[in-house]
Image (cartoon, rainbow, N blue to C red; front, side, top):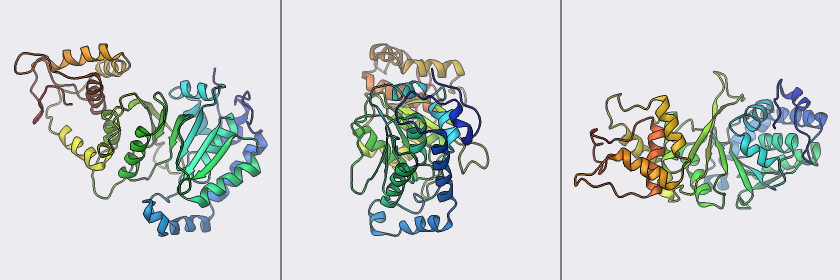
Length: 358
């Protein structure tokens, strides 16, 4: 069983599990946090981060000024609410075991969240960032304050991210553009990240070209075969109006791997298509939401039979010819949009060839 944590950063260690080799002691962890907080409040360091976006390597890697923005999740919330909270517990339990599975952090900056988990829980952790200065700083902090913690940091300019052992991936993407977040999920879909691994992300907060709701990202990723596990409220440096929600998704064996489907244009197109429905009687009830969510966990045959029953018959009086991946994608889209799959005598969606928007 995982422990129940209470209190702030300075009180973390009274309840943390100690069974993992490499867990830091409380004084070392506190000293590490003080160093990280000192960097966070160092004006010259923050100013230098902004200048990074103008360097040639940053331009070639689409590392814009927004990506250089500063913001972290606080240690007590990141551990207590996320890794030791109810939503992510099954994945954390495996990380705490002897499986050798890893936490991989994309956008690891100075090592904050990666070091929380590695130092406090002893979980093997690998951080990646495009800014080599940050990964070098993170590794030096780990070596100085928590030398026994299983944390390693690599610069993505020199190395390709390896997800072979990853069981949880944390994408520190708050403030990233829609395109950057979707592009990361496209790479995760095509990578060697295992089916069943959890990806913790932020839903996206800005884009200069598109006006999209916060729910659009979640709906689109579910449409592409990612299963939504849940959301977790976290306390962060930017949560001035209440805690933001991180989203947790699971990679399935039917995630879309075509890079074009992860473009903002594809997201926008689907969002526009979803807006063609009018009338509120297609909205899902709580019971239907639960049924759809549970159905996504069923075997292919059960799910396919259910979706076909919702689709009804085509104009020739026959069942629609679809396969299980298409059925999962359609059901995931319906879940993400909070809308019923159309069928059983309801009006067809404009421009759709079937009662269920595939």
